[in-house]
Length: 122
Image (tube, rainbow, N blue to C red; front, side, top):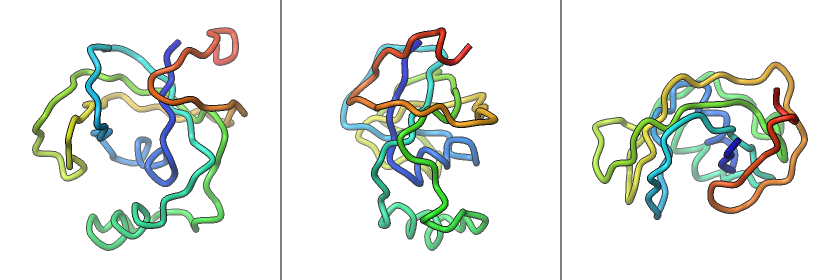
């Protein structure tokens, strides 16, 4: 199964209302992917979510999961424009049907879409 690594808190946000993943590259892939929570934490994104988007029920920055597979979501489209408050381009992967795992699965991330053995998550 394919996976995509996102820094925190954006990985968390996929399971709490984020419906677009912004990238500088496009994808033709459509289907279910795994979300990997990267080792990094982006404080600018945290402030953006809290201050500009009004996402108030966010964990403390030290409470986020890192270096793990945390759930699955469908990529249903890849667009250059979208009305979602989460879209700020250049490309937006349109996300639907997010489902967080009950327990994170420790795993090393990679750049781009990468393969994770099916046996690890099923």
